[in-house]
Structure formats: structure tokens, C-alpha cells
Image 1 (cartoon, rainbow, N blue to C red):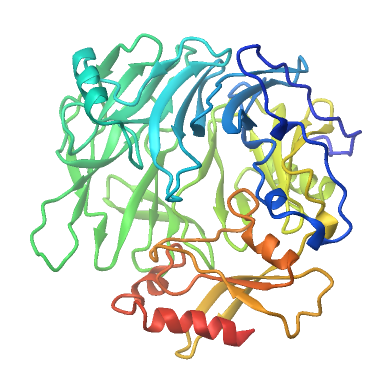
Image 2: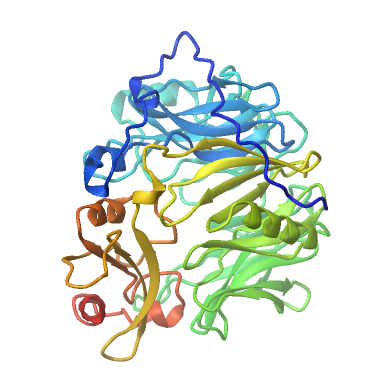
Amino acid sequence: MTPIRSAPILGLLIFVVLPAVAQTSESVKPTPRFTSPADIPVETFFRRAQYSKMSISPDGSKLAALRPINGRENLVIIDFQAGKSNIVTGYKDLDVHDFEWLSNDRLYFRVADFAEASGEIYLRGAYAIDIDGKNARDLTYPLERSADRRARQNSVYFQGTSTSFQVLSRTFDGSGDSIAQIFGRSQSYADVYRFNTRTGEYKLLTPQTPGNIVRWVLDRDLVPRIAVRLEERTDPNKPRRQTLWHRSNADAPWEMIGEPSGDQGSIQPIAFDYDNKTLYVSSNIGLDRRAIFKYDIAARKLGEKLLQHPMIDLTGSLIFSREKKALMGVRYNAAMPDATWFDADQSRLQDGIDKALPNNTNNVMVADESGRYVLIYSASDTNPGGYYLYDREKSKLQEISKSRDWLPPALMSKRTFIRYKTRDGMEIPAWVTTPINSDGKNLPLVVNIHGGPWVRGYSGIQWGRSPVAQFLASRGYAVLEPEPRGSTGFGKKHYTTSFKQWGLKMQDDITDGANAL
């Protein structure tokens, strides 16, 4: 592989604004100059990023991203080879929540209201659209008849934390079809369909199922081959059992091959490899923290352990390449976002990017069908981050855009990962932010606790979600962000020791964190 070398930084790509959708001043404000953190207004810390959730198309020819337009997050397409771009959506009262590529010229996305007064994010719909903004289709209730849709819209508006249409895979043939999990025949469990997102035509791929399925896994031929069934409750004092089912092909009968959850741990199926035989799973059977394994379907047991992390559970985020037809690596969020690469070429690429963009966490994203162009999101605890594009053929690294160029890294505060011991010996992971140019002594302290409590609240760089700690540090506060017992993602013991300890040991963990400082 040609070594990476630095190249002249390109300016921000100029956006072509469609006449029907005018940009607000939010996206074109001049960057102010500040001399100290205290000079930065509160609204400057919390401005929406210029670009977020940027993603490279499967063939590596274009980029999709979210950008504030009309004061809302909207979809844009960047054709970096042609040096132009276009706006795909023009929402004024809703935001594009997330999106993914269905083909090189079509996207699936979901919308929500990021200005919800409650602070909760409720999904308001799901759609597919061409990258030129044409051929949009509502997928919120994809199998609903027109009469039923009119009746529903006259009675209640969709609002929830998930939509009826969940993409399992694109179809790789340019059709814009997707393989999707849809609540069609039942409102209790979903089936798998091949769905044409342009015409609304569909085909049921699971006419025969094991029953109340809560998870499906496709093989590389897009055949539903693995299903997780939720069993009926047999004991009111115990959680409901799950069973793991498999079939060898689309016409074969389903067979139960195990119970993925139990007192000793659980198995979560993730994906098949390109041989259509190797199944990758996440499991904590016999372990405190989940690891990635191969699963032996014939023997109905765990096989080779591929990867385990010393601090966090590994539950998925496997990186595959259709170009190489191989598992490339695993992404995860530990003290900072990171990845372990199984592919030697990809590992060398990561090393080269890290040398070209030092002192940052560099998330390297390679196009699924072409390895020429590489999208990089580079950020640190003081750098709000930016997007770069690397051309492997020309060995050229160029900046696409900073995410928040109005926040100068030189005035941002250091955010440090720590572990502290509680009074009963538990080890708690946490992050501490201290004001810039401070010796860290005799500071007022804010302890910022996540909700849930059975969630993981903080996972590495927080610029994209909530820069609360940076704002408070700019006003002279130290900030502690702990993951007390009960927080998920740190192993079984960290989670289960919270049972019946709400307001007791869980609260002690927070107090002990403040005392530890």
C-alpha cells in the first residue's frame, strides 16, 4: 500500500442551494474570534454541526450527510468528484434523524423532532428517496392500505421510538429494493420482506416462521436463516426465555439450535460470513463481558473467540467488505471510539491515517464496494472534529469540512478517562473535564449523571451528542461523568450489582466518584 502523505487542505465544498429550499443564516454565520473560553456564548457550544453522520456511498463516488437547513437537520449529497452538491430534503418542522444507503442513488431515512419540548426523541416516520430528491416513498406503515392510512391519519399521528420498517440489508442490484423487517401479518412480531421502495411492491420471505420472532439474521444471499424467538412467560419472577432457530436454506424447515439466554449468559446472533456457514455472535456465556465468537451451528455451541475487550461488552458493529468478501474488523466505544482490524491492509491504512492526523481519534470508513476512497471522521477531546477524504490511488488526503469550526480547539478543555474505586471495591469508569489552564485544584464540581439508569450514557467523544462538559468547563467548573453500577455495556457484574440498589449502592457510586476527585 502506498504510504499516506499530507496534502494541501481543500476548502469547504460549495453547496448548490435548490430554489425551493433556502438555507438559513445558521449555516453561513461568520466564525467569531474568541480570546478565552469564557468569551464563547452558550449558544455557540450548542449550535448544530455544519455536517454530521456523513457516510460514503457503496461505490465510493458520493457522500451523504446531515446539515442544518431551515433550522432543521436535512439530508444533503456531496459529489466530491464533480465538486458540487445538492439538498435532498427540505424539512422545516422535523429533522432527519438517521439514514442509510439503499443503493448508490437511493437512501432510506427516518425523521423526528429534535426540538421536542420533553427532550425525548420520538420517530415520526420513515422514507426512501433518490439522491436528487425525487421518487420519495413513505415507509412508516409500508403495508397499510390507502383506506386504513386515511383512517389512521384522521385519528392519531405516528409517534414512537421505532418504525414498522427496519432495513436489514440493501439488495446490491441497483433496484432500490431492500430486505426489511416489517410488522405485516402481526403487530406482535415482524416478518421479513423484499420491498421495492419505489413502487411499494413486496414479497414475503418468511411465510413459515418459528413464531414470535424478535430478531432476524440474513445470510449473504439475503435469505433469512437465523431467528430469535421470544417464548411465553412461565414464571412471573423470571425473565422470558429466548430460543435460537436456524434453517439451511430458504426452503428448509426451521430447527431450534439453542437457547441464547439463560442464567449463565446469552448469545446474540450478528451476521453470517461470506461462506454462508460461519455465524458470528456476541456472547457472555462463562464471561463477565461480551465477546465476539464464531458459532458452530452443526455442533450447536460457541466456537472460536475472535475478540474480547478488557473493559466493555462487544455486541456487534462488525465491518465487512463486499469487495474483499471478508470480515475486516470490529468497531466499539471504549474510553474513546476505536476499532480492531483483522485485515492487514486496513490496519496499515489506519496506522497511516493516525500518523497523518495525529492526536485525534480517527474513524476510518471504507466504501463497501470500492476501496479507493476512504472517509475519515477525525476528532479529539478538544477538537470538535472534521471529515476528510483519502484517495488511495493518488495518496491524497483532503479536508471535506469541519463539524464545528466556530469552536477553537485551543480554547477547549481536556477530557480524561479515569477509573475510581467505590467503598465496596467496585471499579467505576468515568470521564473528567477540567477547565483549560487550571491546575485542577479547588474547583467547583458538577457531577453529570446519565438517565436510565440501565443504559450507557457516555461513550467516548461527546461533541456529536451533548457538549455540556465543555460548556461548564468554559465557565470554570470541573465535570465528572461516571458510569455507576447499573450502566450497561460494562459487563454482567457491573449491571447486575445494581439490582435492588437504586438510591443505595448506585447512589454511593456517584458520591464516591466526587470524593475520589
